[in-house]
Length: 370
Image (cartoon, rainbow, N blue to C red; front, side, top):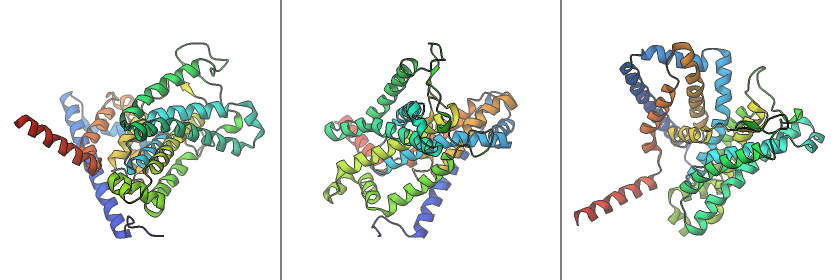
């Protein structure tokens, strides 16, 4: 079945090329700004960038560590893309990642789960993470539908609630018996059969990395070749036109947000099953937020998200090696990240947001003139 929103292959390739070139331009400009900052503090930019590369892909060990960083970023960035294409700015991916991690750990450490075969245990843990993230994503979209509240604000605030709730539960009822009460705590470890299989011995790269790539391809296909995807993108481009055309806005919004939350929850499960083998507090604080940056860098293109997730994973891992290899502060990687978004974000925002911003500025100008 074909839809009006489906583009011919040449148009798709041209659009991907435009987004790729724009992303590369943002990266180059950010590197130039970071290089100037390094010169101002007396550092050699070439040496620093060499350390960044060595720390991320300079050896097989570092490359595998970068791929391990990429996995949750890929899933969480894809989570943002699915909602964004439907006109929903899911700023609360971090909270959905955290809740997904908790539900995955709670189910994965539950003794009755051990009656299932190992592969089924892993699947149940992943599904538990997806369910936790999807449920946590529901309140913002329901409040938007019922009271027209901003999903940006409500989902973002719920991220902090998720962090606090996770800390309360992990330090309280779900704290591992072997862990003493304190600031840092964790749940009971996953059952042995629930540990995620690793793609390389001694690494933290799990099967969810190739699964994430396949999900990115599936999301791209779904958004362009299915009725639901057409309705989502139609709503994302023009909510009023979609409503006038008979699209069930409530159904589309809820489904898009739940799919988004489920993908973020799987990202949390990836951290639990592939890295810690338990839920921890404090939980890694920047996965969901970096994922938004990774999605915006490539214009929220599902096909390009795996590449941007790898890039941000390399920045994160390379920043750790930067200080070790060159003595340069690892925070230069954060400077590069912020500068990239400074150049990339205006291009990535949907036309409707930009039009609304221009309209608001015109109204303020008219009022000022009066």
